[in-house]
Structure formats: C-alpha cells, structure tokens
Length: 387
Image (cartoon, rainbow, N blue to C red; front, top):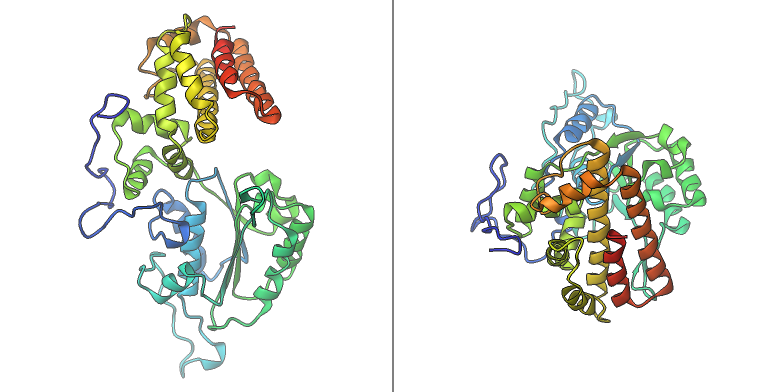
C-alpha cells in the first residue's frame, strides 16, 4: 500500500520487451546514459537515423531537441556506440570486382559486453568525446553554461585522424546553454566538417541555438514518453508504483524520466501526498495541520522538500489552469480523485486561474531570491489559493 492507497504493482509493464527477473537485476542506483543500453520510446528517431546511415547520407551534425529528461542523452550514446562499432571501407582496398556491398543495419543495438560499449562507458574510446557543463565546486552544482574553452577543444579533436579508422563522434550536452561565443565556435566546425564525423547537440530549448547552427544540422525532435514506457523505465530503476502514484509522478514530472527519478529521490511524491491531503479541506484550511507541514519543510536540512513543495503547488495551479483553458477534465491521477478541484475549475475564471499561477510563481521567486523564512512562505502559498 502506498501513500495514495494503491497496492504496489510488481509485474512488468505489458506491451514491452522489458522484464525484471533474476537474470536482469535492477541496479541499485540510477543507470547513467553512458551505461544504459535501453532507450524506450524513441523507435521512430532510430528508424530515421538508420535510414540515413544505410543510404550513406549521415549528416555531420544532429540536434536532438525535446524536453529535459526524456532520454535524449541516452539515445545520443546509443548513436555514438553504433557508429563507432562500424567498419568504414577503405576506397583504396576495393575488391577485384568492385567494393563489397554494405549490409544494411536494422538496429543500433550494441551489446553491453561489446568493446565499444565498454570503452565509451569508461571514457576510454579515443574517437569519442563528450562536452558538458563543468562542475562548480564553490556552488556544489554544474555551471550555468557550457564554456567556450571546452567547445574550442572540439575542432582539433574532430580534425584528427580517427584512431581506429572509423567515425569520430562528439556529444555536446546542454548545448542550449552555450553563449554566443561558444555557438560561434561550433559554427566554424559546421562550416567545414571533416569526413566521417558526427556532432550531436543536445537542446532542451531549440530556440536558444542560433539559426545558422540550426540550418547546418538536422534537427530530430523527441516527444514525451508514453505512460507505458515511463513505467517500464521506472521499473528498470527498481521503482514499482501503484497506478495513482504512477499517474501522479507522470504528470508532475511532465513525462520526464530524469525529473521523475529526481522527484522520487527528493521525496516529491511524499510532499505531493501531504499537500493534496491539505486540499481536502479547501477552502477552509486546517491551519493546525498546515503548520506541521510548514515546520517540516522549513527545516535547514530539508531544502529539497521545500523545492518539491514549490513544484507541487505550481503544478496544481497549472493543471487547473490548463483544464479550464481546454475545457477538459483533469487527467487521471491524484487531482481527479478529489471533486473539489473540479469545483475550483467550475467556479473560477481562466483569468483568475492564470493570475493564481503568476502570483504563486512571483511568491516563490521572492522567497528564494531573498532567502526568506520558509515556514511563512508555505502558509502564504496556501492562502494565495483562497485569495
């Protein structure tokens, strides 16, 4: 039984080829993209790349565009492993009756025990490079952007002769955080790309890349994961959720598996359960219970909990606004289980709900910017809903 009253499901998702059994052990920690052979939900993107590869029309640059945390980086590693595991025919070594025809590839699967897979995962493949935001020790997190100095290392790497006579692949993660200098450095590479090289740019916000980069690369759009693929990937990480809890996580994370795992790790579902319990008394709040929650969220060592509280409150406001704007019912999940949310939608104007979203957003931004007292911030957030 979980916090939503569901019996936890231990069975694997039907309709996928993923099962978890004794021979397919669930890892104790989240599988990193470089170690993950599984990439559900993006078969159309794979078919498109295989079609280009089999036709000898692989572009020199790809832009993977889509929401953060839906598997773009995992897929980029999949493409890199596939290309680096291929042999490139030497035009000077043709057979007596002409070059042998290349066998069309039907899948990009590379087994985890394949040398290319292992070397890329270990960071030891001489023809592969990944560029990411550097870690800021002072702030304890990644820097806000990919630095130009890191980008400038890409051009000489790509222009070197491939150590293994095949492809050279570079992945630039969070490419949409690059400043203009960094993007201009990328542009110089794209103007004269070396043969048998691939540059993959990961962009959560495609519009942040300058038009000249977008025009010199093939943009591949990634769609949100289906609920079935989302559940399968969660089970892969050892998280077996009941249906209501699963739906809550799916909608709160906006179908992003990366965001969902963060929510689980940081207690997001627990916070959601507590908040929705408070809403059972809306609009006559039981402030004695809210004070208990506020005290817990205000603890100095519970910064993640307060962040999750902000996310949940903003998510509720946005879900109500979206439902009102589209004239639809709330999606299945914890909000649809309470009739009061439907009542709020019916009794509120779209302008009023939009104003609620803006007011909540401004409130939390003020609290975070001014490092204000979190207990009062929690109390005011609930009062904003009844203002």
